[in-house]
Amino acid sequence: MKNKIIVVEGDITKLQVDAIVNAANRSLLGGGGVDGAIHRAAGAELLEECRSLKGCETGEAKITKAYNLCAKWVIHTVGPVWRDSTCQEDEFLARCYRNSLALAKKQEIKTIAFPAISTGAYGFPMDRATKIAVKEVNNFLVTNSSIEKVFLVCLGQSAYKMTQRILGKF
Ligand code: AR6
Image (cartoon, rainbow, N blue to C red; front, side, top):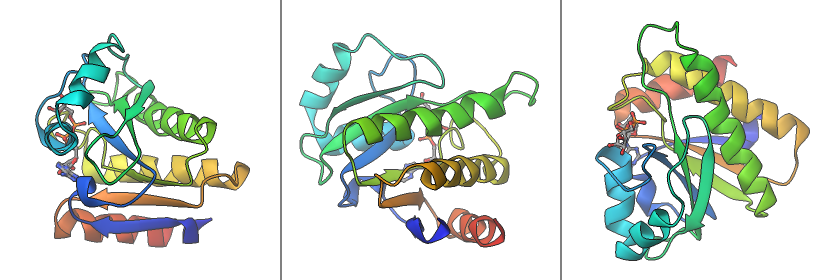
């Protein structure tokens, strides 16, 4: 299944895929980081649709249209804030991947791109988060054939190299 997982470096808003995943916050009303970039690129209509969703719990996921983005859909998920590993952060992060992929399957999405959820403002250690991402995506692909390609999008060379290394060892 590893050949369906592709690591890319760059801005997730530029990708031509069926769906991009947003590392949002519980309000779903925008923010900084990848969330800010997605809202800027998608346009004001995205925020309008997000308002109707009435927020999202940590580990859950909700879907909207993607408006001015190249993608058709945005799947908004809320990662955990990293504290000290004792607050079920690993499990909540795993749920973000599982729930996003389940939504994608339901929507008949074939290609999907994830940012490194929780590894920016939310402070989750990048290597630990990447291992969880690779494990959850692989688990999904083993039991589901609907999704053809999953892109793990990294901002910067060091994140890219680390993700390649973790995927290679998996
Ligand atoms: N394309 C791909 N990856 C990106 C991009 C981009 N355009 N921009 C940032 N990253 P973060 P979080 C990477 O902070 O930690 C927001 O304010 C970044 O390098 O965007 O889940 C929300 O509203 C990092 O590796 O998300 C929430 O309040 C990763 O994306 C909060 O931040 C995630 O960083 C969520 O924090």
